Image (cartoon, rainbow, N blue to C red):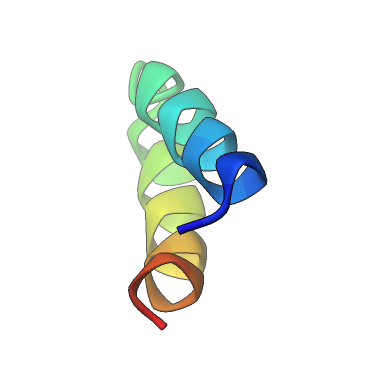
Length: 35
């Protein structure tokens, strides 16, 4: 897992106040982090 992807994942998690934005971000980030 690259540092950039880690930071993106954390940033997405912090945005879960807006569930739609947070979930979309996590869905798009997950494949990049796991591969």
